[in-house]
Length: 89
Image 1 (tube, helix red, strand yellow):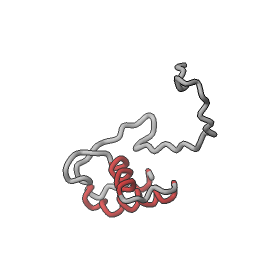
Image 2 (tube, helix red, strand yellow):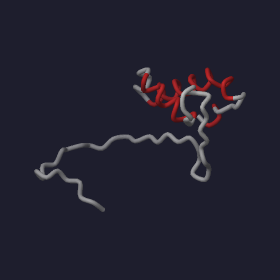
Image 3 (cartoon, one colour):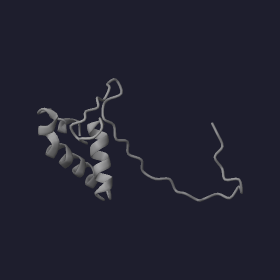
């Protein structure tokens, strides 16, 4: 375990926080990248929709983030060859 205390030794007084992890697949799976979403580079659907939610300012709450990600996936499903990714979100 590494010591990340500030050099001054002064305690910053944080109370912790809530952490939420977003993942494009289960631990025993691999996510695939596709170019259909970004139209420029290959990226994963989860990553693309996450970035879009941040860029659009729709990441205020967990619910807002998830709703925005689902909307992005829905609006791009036809570009993904009819693949349904909403079940994963």
